[in-house]
Image 1 (cartoon, rainbow, N blue to C red):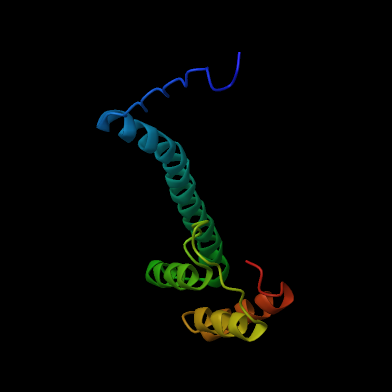
Image 2: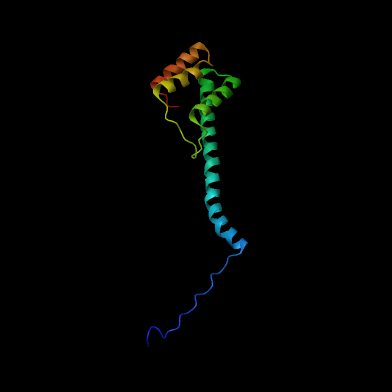
Length: 128
């Protein structure tokens, strides 16, 4: 049998997807990625807020901080350290920036407690 005598088979017509099928084909993978991303985002923010709240609560008793001062310090901490979202860029702070950050917090305290706070932050190299 020669090649010329063979009949060419017609290729089957491409199947057309319905709009609903296209939406499922695109939407399901997006949902499978988006749902864990949202959960990670909000759980990380919650963990960061909880961590900062615990730290400031410890400082309340150690440095005799009022509730108003504690709320202001929490906001300073969130502004400096970020919300905790894994999708945000966490800036690397220089030693000087950390020192200014601690000074800002210490100014909200009494002079004696502020000085003790600064000494504690310098000893721990600003880790809190």
